Amino acid sequence: GANHSLAACADGSAYAWGNGEDGQLGDSMNGAAYFSSAVSQIPGVSAAVNVAAGASHSLVLQGTGTVMSFGDNVYGQLGNGTNTDSASPVQVPGLINIVRLAAGGYHSVAIGADGAVWAWGRDNFGQLGNDPLMDSNVIEQVPGFLQEEGIRPRSTTETYAAVTLHIDNRRWAGVPFYLRTGKRLGRRVTEVAIVFKPAPHLPFSASATEEL
Image (tube, rainbow, N blue to C red; front, side, top):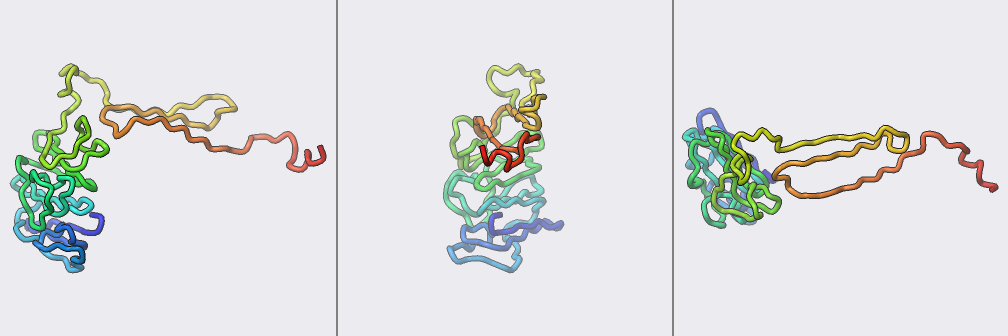
């Protein structure tokens, strides 16, 4: 995380250490001045197979396919239907048969055994894959390309493409043009970056025109 760390052990236990002011250590303690430099076992977790740390929240994937969350919840990144921080692990409602998880700064993502993707928390840049952009304190399934309205179920259209172009003349030699397009990109933007380079040949020396 931003200032805390997590670890899952082979015996199913999980450990946390570092900053715990928002409850992200899962030991029922929090507060502006609370931190732990000692590696401490997280109470209530006995079947951990993976962990993920956000900026100030924590996720634990259990062998049962369920997910526990704790810590900062200002954007709903704990997925428990509230925006209240939790200093103890609580199960994320509605998540079953989860095989992988990840934590962004203020959002969380889980992938089910069936390939379904679930996301919750902050959505200011489209992190949750929904439209319009809106934070969520409950899990939301991220629709796939084939599930969107107007898309043929057997479509094989690529959903992302990136191309680098060059113009083969002296003026534009060595100047790359980057084109990127795709679905669910974080923003729509056109950027022009100008970098001045020395001319390949100067007909006069630097001092040859001083007396003109």
